[in-house]
Length: 236
Image (cartoon, rainbow, N blue to C red; front, side):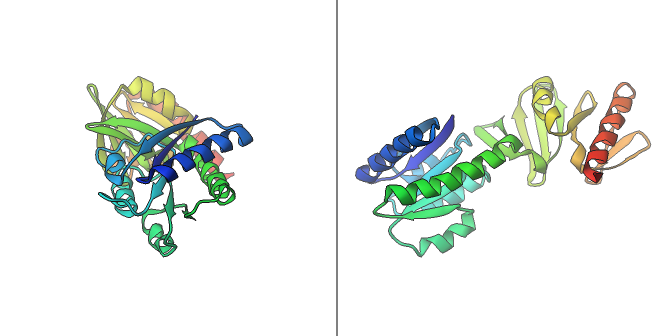
């Protein structure tokens, strides 16, 4: 199921895009979950990172598409954004918010389907490397490659990432099931470490981005074996 948001304040275009999506579904054997928003402010404020693709009109009454995309990018760097506009100069500005492409109005099905092909290809390439975490006030999409380690403190999980630390709810056991196949391993009861960011192991500690994370006696051997396997695969 591909989750798509259509953000368009003109009803005629909103319905047209929805029709195009349903046509694309049938022709390409895809499955879409479509959400409609009548203005940029409807999706941007209290945004939840739950969409794979956003089709965003640029010119809207309350919050234009460019401003909405800037707000969305604060918590979701991975969602694929395609702008819908009758002003091609917005294509250049779209690079600032990592927009994949733009479609000019009036929208033809051929042009639309070509952009959607690209969007789905990018989305599927990324999908196995992203996780959704529940943070206070919403949901955050994280690229696991940018997660250094996760620290458990009771019922709180602290995700230490390249962009900072995020506090989320959840259990270490459930998270470990998700992240272990992606190169994460427990160093002790409280730390789930991304092996890609381990710089060294010294005096019973794993060094991750300059931080020393204690390896428990019970887990050290398995951790070292997992790290050796990972380094061996990287060096092939």
